[in-house]
Length: 350
Image 1 (cartoon, rainbow, N blue to C red):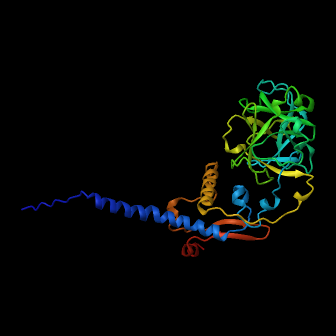
Image 2 (image 1 turned 90 degrees about the vertical axis):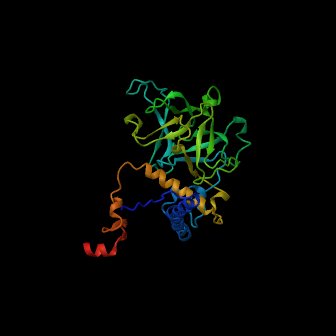
Image 3 (image 1 turned 135 degrees about the vertical axis):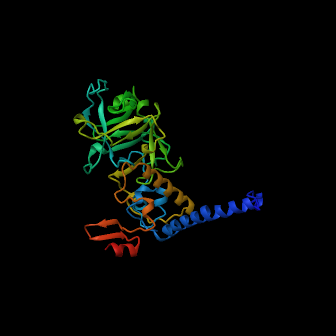
């Protein structure tokens, strides 16, 4: 006689919810809290400025003591002579008294205007890297002398080295036919027939339009008012011999791109009260806001990796962790951080 055993595999809703909640808490909530906990410890211990500051926003950097950004940030006034640095490529906006060629290699025609480029390893006090920031309209030239520049202001830039206005127009750039060419026009033309083409507007990352523009601290896009493109440069390919191998600058129509941001790097010949450093109180940001910013940056930079990390390992090797990793090395001072991993395994391998 065969005994029939019937197993009821159906769970009541109450039991199902209890099982679901148990697994959700054990497999998701608890690991996430542990993950957050390590970052909380990280932010609690590391309270001073370090070499990785440049990756973080100005607000984040101001939460760190001894931050060079807080020390070097100076308010920018109209008629200041400034240098502009691209955030991603760390090069300075530049122009020189050479023209674009009449015809490019692909047969396209240029305006033959004065070249505007971007340079790394710039020479100190090079007039070709310097720009005077001017009010939008000529009648404000004297009335705004010494007035602060606000993020969101409309302005013009005069190139100090060749005494002309920066502009962009509906002419294809040398390397990107879809983007606009940047060039320089003389003062007389810029004040008369091409006045509108010389107008730009600061679009700040933090969107606090009334905040004062500061060197190092303010991250902004430079919008061209008439054509709605943003000042942009790139280092994936550089200009040919006629452009001295410098980076191309053009007007990017993809205004939302994250690599359109610039900073005011310095104010040339700064004098007066702004030259003195006044210690500032270290600000605070909510933990979750700092954590979220760091997560987004980690995700962004990880997506930009074009090759595998030399010390990458497969998940299957993690439990045993038999091999250590040379995480950081300073050859000058002969210092090293080495991740041992599994102590027993490393002793065995040695």
